Length: 483
Image (cartoon, rainbow, N blue to C red; front, side, top):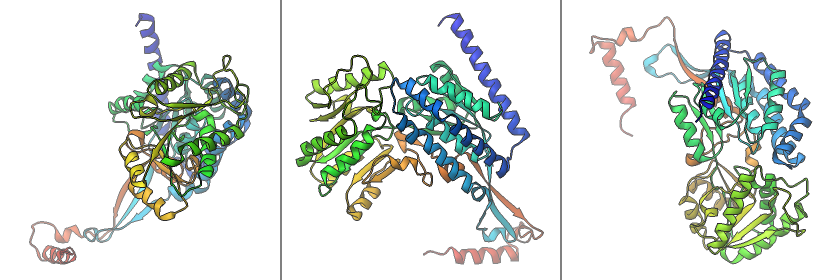
């Protein structure tokens, strides 16, 4: 590393720490924003997103070198606005102190939980949804009364610049700050002593972020990924499953942390599913190369990684079906056709690493027990999808598998339900946000005991063995006798 680079990094770190210090001072001056102040911030964010809608859509399109405006509107902007609406509606109810049960030993006291802002929340934004995954945590942070620093993705720089301009125009510099720059800036950002840090990205980088946060004992919310499976029961119509999965897998060209990563298909129906999936996908995207509805791969590096993954599978014996309805060439674009991959094995990269693109491995199975064991034998995924009209078997899937979230007879849409928590488990993440869980995630739930004029401890205190102490112990032991 050159001396110039070291100086630049030192300068960046100093600027970041100055920004954080300024926000901390502002929080200290106003540690408990009222409901009206929090709602005002949410209202301003709502209006800013509406005003900047077209610019944000254009910026995302430019960053991807071809991204559907409808997808940006449907998957990024509308969920943010819906989240703001939901938080604004419920905020006053969430802020109320909650009464709790008081044990007999505290006779005469009251117990409650007080929800307090943490302070300054750091948000690291990924490239695949550079608007929603920056602003959705911000909504939760605002609802809980916090301030926030946002590190925009270096792989979506135009979107980051528009977000920076939008938020700077809408909020004071001690309410929200957007930081842009490369991986060095991101590294320094995660080392800051935030009161909470939200990171969305790969499991590999998530481990690094968690390690950096540990040096400051900063609590983290990690939204990672992994290989989210779909299981199709033998009784479910294979064409219907293929149609529903094709809709989800096509969104953002599969560059979604909860995109179906591989499909567990009844052994005798693998070919039927492949044919039905290709037919459904082709209906959505009859052409690809110059089709504005079909999103490009974000960078050359990601494009090459996906092609290498396909080559690795083919070299190890997989059968690859390239879905290219118009028989186009892709020399001038980063568009990548959907690839349906059969005859896969565990030694293939496509079955070992998160795909994050338009590749879809099909894994045959014979019994539901076998399918459940297959899922449970791997890292716990961010999402799991199960197709079956039978409610009893669906409940069994919920009981016997672990995942961050589940859709039954559907894919991916659980992420846009604001009245449910969103988050991973184990290698797919930790912590939750969205809705009330987001409010709680970005709040300190502080237990409070308030004692009145009556002091019961004065009656039962030492010297032990006094009359009131003996009566108290005798009564309690009767309550706690063996069941």
